[in-house]
Every structure is written in C-alpha cells, then in structure tokens.
Image (cartoon, rainbow, N blue to C red; front, side, top):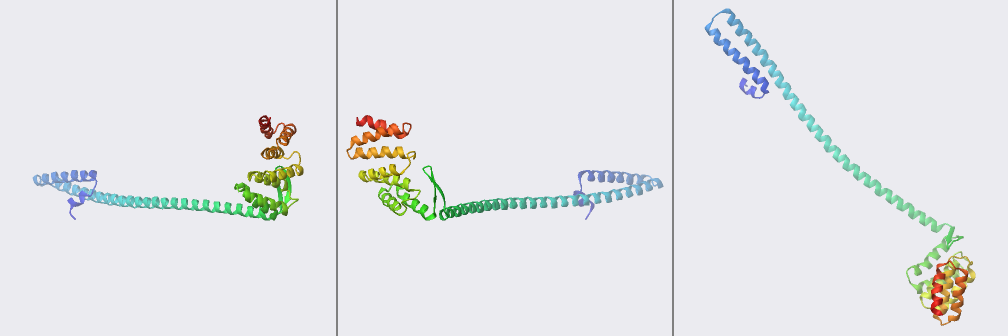
Length: 261
C-alpha cells in the first residue's frame, strides 16, 4: 500500500504533521540542487531520518487507534449483550414472582378448605343467638342443611327440614333457634296456626332474655291478627311493650296497637 492511501486512515492531526515534514523535505531537496555542499546533504539525510521516524510513530498511533476502535466496538457489543440478558432476567423474575403468588394463593385456598373440612368433622363449640354449646360434626351439618331452605326462601323445604331436625335432635343447642326459624317458615307459608304453635313453643323453651324473644312475641301477635283473634293479639302486643320496652319489636308493636284500636 502506498503512502497516500495509508494517510487517509490516519487522524487529521497526524496527516497535517506528515504534510509539514514532506514540505520541509521538498524545500531542502530543492536547496540541495542549488547548493551542492555537504551541509545540505546532511540536512536532507537528517530530515529523511526524522520523516522516517515520524512515519513509524504515526503508523504505530494509527494501529493503536484502530485497536482502540475495535476494543470500543467489542465493549459496546458486550454491553448490548448484558442489556439483553438483564431484560430477559427481568422477564424471568416477573414470571417467577407471578408463579410464586399463584402458588401461595392456591396454598392459602387449600389451607382454608382443609380447615373448613376439619371444622365440620371435629366436635366443637358453637354460638348461636348468644348461646354457647357443644355440637358434633353430624349435628352441625344437619343444622346447616336444615337452614339452607330458609336461606333460599324455600319455606316448604325449610318447614320440612327444620321440623325433621327437631325430631332428630330434640335437645340440641340449636333447638331454640330452629323453633324460631321453623315458626318463621310456617308464617311465610301462611300456615298461621302451625306458626302460632311453634312460636309459643319457642317462647316457652327459650330464656326470657333470648335475643329473638321480642321478635317472636311480635310475630305471634301477627299470627293472631291473621286468624282474626284481635283480643289475644292486643294482649300480646301490650305484654311485649311492657316486657321489652327498648326493643325494636316494641316500636312495631305500638304501631300495630294503634291500628288495632
């Protein structure tokens, strides 16, 4: 490769210095033609030596610059590879975190399901309408099944299932609650005479401070209204107001009395 093509690859500053040295060499060569003396020839030889040294230095610098450029390109490629790897790792981490969250949710749901099954199978203590009592798994399950019809608004099913529960578990801790809801289901079916009997049975068996006692007395009075026994209905409403003056049922009782009078 000649000098001119190689110079195109060198930095501008290096090419400038080569130009300066070449110009000096041309001038001295011209002077040597005019003055054929020993000093001129030595000057030319010195300039040629300096030019050769400059060329060698410039060549070395050019090679170093090219190597630096190659190194920069290699570093840039490596950084790009690292960026791509980091992006992939972030994606993998996000997938892993979602997977862990899903597994934790499944474990939690499974634990709750197991706890619920164990609770239904093992004997325990129940609290219904403020009353605490021991109950076994079969009895608890039978109560839940009996109440399902009432919760669904199916009064025929509720009347049948709750009645069967009382026959099967007459002394159950659920018994008072079941009598109240059985009477409510009978009232919902407009079987007022059966509801009257069941509400009275509830008021007889339940404690006077049972939280549903005021509501049961009001419902019983309504049963008598529906069966055209206004006298008994009035007496029950007056008794309700006197016995439970602060109860919400007493407010309804006063309104009903005003209508009956």
